[in-house]
Image (cartoon, rainbow, N blue to C red; front, side, top):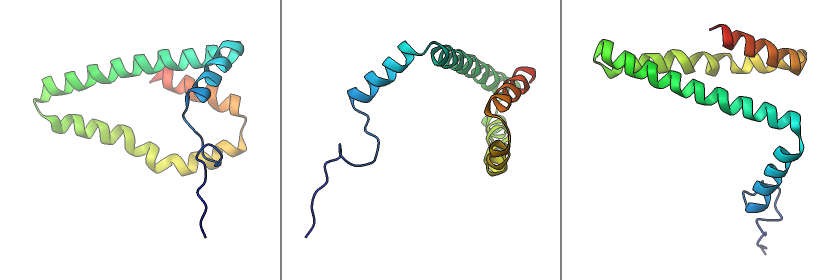
Length: 109
């Protein structure tokens, strides 16, 4: 005999309006988290403008989509390969130090 489970009562997260409003409430009430979240949004916007510029530049210089493909492989392959190792390292050091170090490395490149 099987019983149907209510999706709201299961352990999986629900993406209803209630969760969205609680997320907005978190952003509204927690000043430090709000600043961190906004800085991440601004950084992502800058990253996407950078990607667009690189894609256009590679397309114009080479006239080939293959250069864009190689750029994407060079960008996304190292995190895929080094991700498991980074997880082990992240468990051994302070989260704050890791975030600051990664942001400094990202800013210097």
